[in-house]
Length: 360
Length: 258
Ligand SMILES: Cc1ncc(C[n+]2csc(CCOP(=O)(O)OP(=O)(O)O)c2C)c(N)n1
Ligand code: SF4
Ligand SMILES: [Mg+2]
Image (cartoon, rainbow over all chains, first blue to last red; front, side, top):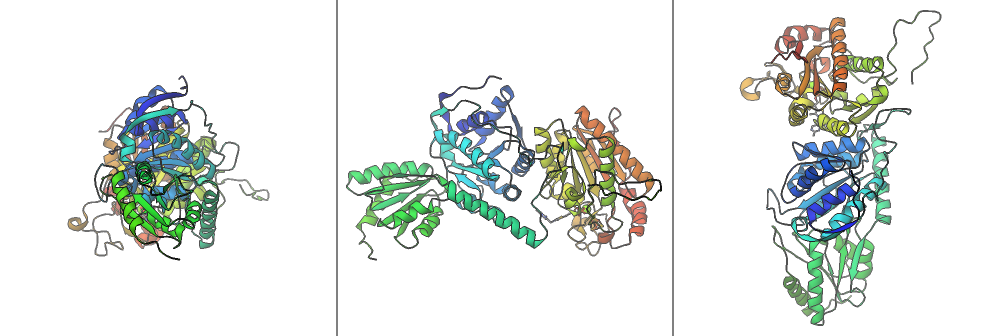
């Protein structure tokens, strides 16, 4: 098969993510259809037979994530994708993958919940993605794209990080990013080489046997495993925090938003600045590790944070922890698949600015 | 590592296979799991495929199978062993892959994975240890528990109106076109052990042909869960289990019995 050169295309977010996965050297994809991410499975089932790798439609998300476990344990570069209800079904498997320290990519193109909810975009799965999701003390590395270009780029980043730390990585997207079309520049194929890790179960040729498990009956051993995992998450927090800032230096009020709302916030920030209100913006790119330090630093010099999310207020709790009482943290969100408008945010900003400033 | 045995001039007539580790088995005395493990590993040794095989352990009493089988292994979530085995086999198509599962694992919580793995005709071996009970969790009713069988969650005996019928999942599996070889065996006598061993050998030979799933049920015992002595389990197997789960081939390559 011919390897793909770098090129620019106009594409849907879901398709860009799927194309990126092939170019990132995906060995295997296991998934189950669900709107608004089915294009990932559709694109891969169309492309992979003509190119390289393996794609299999499983009988459920439960099966998909356990196939991911098996293939990752066998040393393959492997992924699955789904949307909120499907990701809920995967949680036991994700916990096993994190505990057994297997690298893989899980994509959640979030839709509105709870329950069957709606197929429209949402950020209602922030808690699930960043606080563990399944049982036990574990974390995922969570990347939040805000453009179709990042739907492509973060596939490479996620595989790199997952393999570096032997841990599952998640791309937390949403229904709008999955469906919208934008220009996207793909890197040349083959930029992310992959070697079968020495711990993989590939048959014990010329070495002691490998086994993959998350079971440790003795509490002393189980605590050691937990301590080891927590060490790893600390390393990740030390090395892998990513965020973007806009107009922070002179800002009196700083917006905090991830994913699509961060783009809406940019527009709101412009509208406010046109009115002479000094507004800045922080966009967390990694939701775990969360950009605590920058938010903590900013909290020492601004008057207010305003957190904008497409949920009932989830990341706002992490912003509050980072601000640690040093400045008020406000929240404005929409739910159920509704998308907040720049004007709504501006209105909120004006409300906050009109309030008397809190004294220390 | 195989321990050195000092024979003191005597002839060695039996040795456990090098495909078993020296770990002490945690199984209760008289439990069929131990025999099934040993036979599986004997076949792996005799076929010389120790370096080319990956096994999947379930959640159930055999969760620690990877401590005993001296091969590469993965431990799956409860019920998902055949999905995990699918993931392994799809990325390592030239390796031998098997899952080893209990009746709760394979025929209750993992029924969907079992049916669909076989229906896709995954080129793996599924070893299904049917002891008619949840051994690991302390003897609760399994999907395969017999009518009238007393367990800790059917203390008055399994009642068809309340609990439904024992599930003959092997008969179901045999109906699926993806199944290549389906057989029901036992490991409670030397003769049944020999037959089981032959079935395992067949299954691994067939796996090379890439013709579909091989499925071996072992109608086994659980002295602790059944709350009888190991010796009494032999009688229970023969008088109660085999009449409902008759031993023999359900589907053989070339001469489908369906
Ligand atoms: C999701 C989940 N549910 C329940 C359990 C508890 N559990 C562990 S083993 C088991 C049943 C095992 O029975 P079986 O598969 O027949 O194996 P056996 O011990 O009899 O060999 C159950 C219910 C679990 N570990 N995970
Ligand atoms: S509980 Fe039953 S199945 Fe489990 S080891 Fe003991 S006898 Fe065997
Ligand atoms: Mg059982």
